[in-house]
Picture 1 (tube, helix red, strand yellow):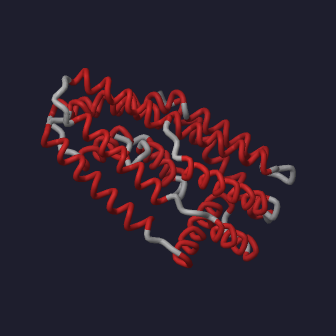
Picture 2: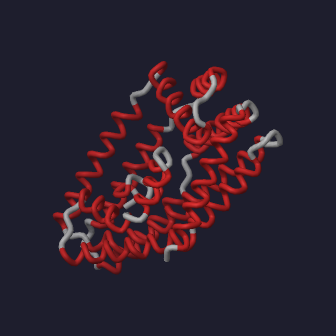
Length: 286
């Protein structure tokens, strides 16, 4: 059900979106996840009272796991990032920080798999039809939004995203830094088609498992095996492109960090301190 959660658990999506807003908004959103997650799920599939209760229970457990095991790691990652962001920063250190972020995503992804294994087999025929119809709609939206971008349009979108990301943490970029961002964006390659293909493979495989006449226990076992195999299966072309893109962003990050103004340095310290404090506070609210 990764696609039920837009291919990543809603906690992470909300974290990402919230980092584009004020710190207090992030904390408010995080503390409302126990309502936001069931609300999102019910937007994808109509739940009966039994499933509503289970989704609510599993959401609380998932949030508790995330609060107890992940938030302190985020705070520590930001502390190390803050210490490393100076004139001695190297591309090797940047790649290490990115690898740590990827490990955070993987931990949440695997945890979501566990939850979906227990919940998906409980859907009845009509609920499954509704769910997969909505997933098909989201895949169609994905295709329209990401796979048709070419040339200047693609570079412009990538440039805007890169600049927005850096300005979240540094404040306004200089003209020179914006030029560097556009040059990097022009080198990035899209993986949209490969990602769409994996989304569709995921959907078809899950649908096939759930539409069998086997018992719930059999579906649980089949789903667990599928998730394990799916996560191990690599798309070599896509992963190669992703690695190349990461290297491009790493080099850009190094250039921008080494050209930061005093105002940008102060903005970065303030921003990271705000999130370190918030992650620490949220981790204590158990």
